[in-house]
Amino acid sequence: MLHGPVDGTIECDNGNVEVRSGFNSNMVNTPYGGKLKVSLDLKNQEKHIEGLKGMTQVEPFTDFFYDSLKLGDGAYSPLEGFMSEEEANSVMKKKSLLNGLPWTIPIIFTINADMSDGLRPGDQIALLDPTHRPYGEMEVETKFKLDKKEIAESIYGTKEMKHPNVQDLFEKYGDKAISGRVKIYRDPELPGGAYERHPSEVREEFTKKGWKNVVAYQARNPPHVAHEYLQKVSLEFPGIDGLFVHLVVGRLKKGDYKANVILDSYDALIRNYYRMEKTMMGSLSITMRYAGPRASIFLAIIRRNYGATHYIIGRDQAGVGNYYDPYAAQRIFDELDVGMIPLKFKDTFYCKRCMGITSESVCPHAIGDRMIISQTNIREMLRTGQEIPTEILRPEIARILKKGDVINEG
Ligand SMILES: [Zn+2]
Picture 1 (tube, rainbow, N blue to C red):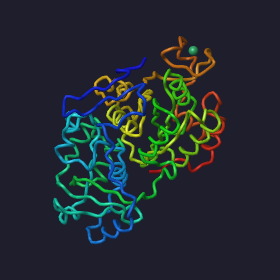
Picture 2 (cartoon, protein in one colour):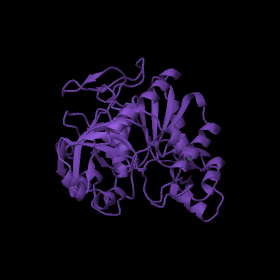
Picture 3 (cartoon, rainbow, N blue to C red):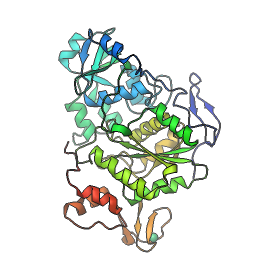
Picture 4 (cartoon, helix red, strand yellow):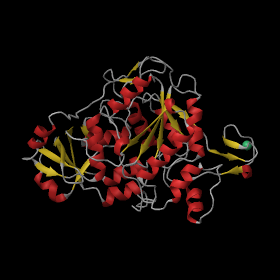
């Protein structure tokens, strides 16, 4: 059931970059690439912010605003800055960074045409948050034209505008991109609020709790009972000390739930149904990449940087529409080793004959015996005012979802 080596360290062929750290080691997982790359400096904040005044002031598009903060606090280690054209091309074509480490999503910073004329390699720019206040800086290393078609096809597997990230790419991203390192001097307000913590803080908390093997759960939706099942079955694995529910609440797509709804739902679930000493929840305010398997690898790398050792992958993780094979996100972990042990689960549902939540791997009964649990049918029941069966959704969560104004209108 567990995939990959269970202990020890493997050196990568390229430049001694450590890929896998250990299961059953005496500490939480090592950061990806060996070290947390942090350029976040919250000391001397006033002095730093004062120093930004003379620079060209740039307010990045939301996606890059979020990414800059994760580059700063080490969540995207070993990356330290926005990618150059060569690095982004390597990610698109080879699914790896220029140093050979597997990486699947290009982290780019695009600018519009008027801004592009004024920016040259070597320039220092001040970064402004959505309230127009400076929070960090970036040194422009290179400037290049973005091949949007290539990104859409290689990362998302489609050029169709109904794919949310592809639509953003063509309609909201600029045509040129700049690369370079970032430095962050302030913690701007984020959708995750107090749940948004830096990898170093989360790692420290795991260590304080005595957790070594931590299973991370990726979510961007309020939990139904099948999610709960995956999380609790994972906690049953021998050697797993804790569960880290990490909720992507940055920019989601139209029709997804709002950040506070996702956070409140998980908070209610955990308080009522989980062993608190084995569970921790946190937010990850980034733009969701609905890139199926490529997104799964990216999201697993981030969780490694927060200290997790294991990663839960259910059916169609990080998918949207029918763009990806529902199990491609699991298979890509056989191809790419990012030092996380994937826990792969088949489709889960409520079976009337088993009288409980079960999955395709263990339930022998007919499809007709299943109550399919999906956000779509929960949404439909809410819309039409039906009572949602407790076999599908905990009543505490149903109450939160019934409040209205819960859906992100885009
Ligand atoms: Zn059954």
